[in-house]
Image (cartoon, rainbow, N blue to C red; front, top):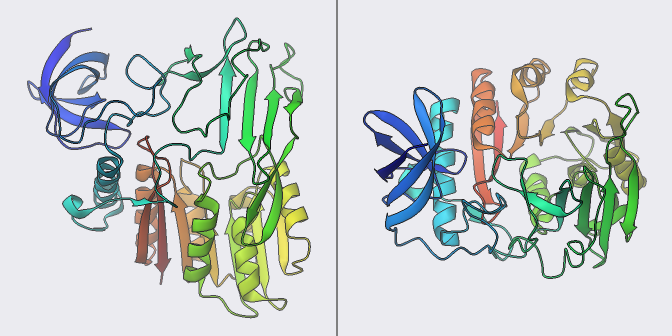
Length: 401
């Protein structure tokens, strides 16, 4: 497609920046605000285009040589912001969140020029990830996807990963169509699990799973408690995220003995643990998730907490049948957000205090807008750079009414 010379404007959600060409909006990847670039149009959506930077003509002072050796327009899609300083990336993420909250949530968090995401832990841009999933090529090599592509990059030197995390996996031939799940756990053990390939009979219940190295479960520790979580199940990718978020939830929940808390989309029950400590034996904590593997991990890790109930079901169904009102609800939904139906049910249940976590800025902002439509006010809001070198961000809001 055509190439354009563009002067790039503010950041947009999803890792692009906004430029204009003859009145048409162009979302430009691999560019920074204020830069002049030569960009190749890669898709035409009618009213707007998407383009990739192929040459930087006037660079931003925030531009650096790529921190990730395999990322970029011709590389993997793993670290799509590796060409900017970590401080600049945090500012861009804060500006995007502020913009999305204003546009989609009707909430003014702060002036975009002053907005910034907070570092997590020591704020290191590299070596922070403890879980990763790889796909395999038709000839059996493991790799990372290119941006929005089925094509894989088989160089495994992603800067997000600690040294040695993927050692040797590029030297083996894997079944085409298989996925490799790799977790470095808190015992320092590497666990590698292969899932798939999917059987030719699509009616089979699920793809086969095989432990290649370590175990099927990874040992994770938060707040003095130990979880054994399937390598294929959800756990926070950043090594410090589970601790940082659970400490924040514990402080914001403001629970005391005998109260009731709901931990929705609760995974292995990390938040349920801190909520249970606050409500004591006379209280009640209900943690809900659809994953059977996560539920098993939660039941085992929280077995000594008699106030905790683990429910394997959808949040919508669990809320529909819930009779006792919660004093606080904690939600950590998938990237698509909780959505109208779930938030309507929370509001109808009269939950006075909600802690809502979101890993996608637009979905998070829409959810905040839905809460505000039910009379909830935003008391606190924190934005974390939980995925350094990428455009992804984690947002946590405390809402009450």
